Every structure is written in C-alpha cells, then in structure tokens.
Image (cartoon, rainbow, N blue to C red; front, top):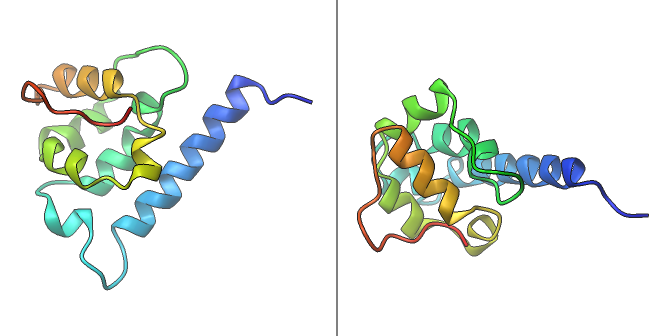
Length: 111
C-alpha cells in the first residue's frame, strides 16, 4: 500500500510543527533565542508554503506577517538537518520574496 502525496504532505507538515515547538521551547538556546523575529510563526504559519511537497504557491497573510519581522537568513543557518530536509529552498526563496523580505544572494534554506 502506498501513501498518497496528500498524506505525505500532511505528515511532513505535522512533523515540521512538532519540531518547531521543540526548537522554540525548553531551557536550551534555540533558534528563537538566536534569531530576531517571529521564528515560531514562520515555522508554523509558513509550513505548508515551504514544504517540499506540492507546487510553489503564494503564502498567506499570516505567513507573510511572520516573515516580514524575522531574520530568515539567520533561521536558515540555524535549522537542524531534519527540518532542512523537508523544506524546499525554492519555496523559501519565493515566500521571502513575495512577503517583501527577500533572501540575500547565496543564502540556502532547505534542500
């Protein structure tokens, strides 16, 4: 039995949300501590727009609100490989550009 692309995308979305919660909570230094802005908002509100699965789509207003105030290059540099592995670099670039906070040349975020 094979999984549909929708169920795989949903699984990746839930995994991203779970990892985001781990990264921005607890007593250890986290991405939220290291990078300015709404890191948790970016990881939760933008998950469906930066997930590898599916086509590039324009992000929601809530996603853009988080992206506009967040140091995305910092977040990208701090992402653990487990999260970077489910994020599309092309989609992150599109979301950042669309939301008015474009990535500087050479910044790689995701795979």
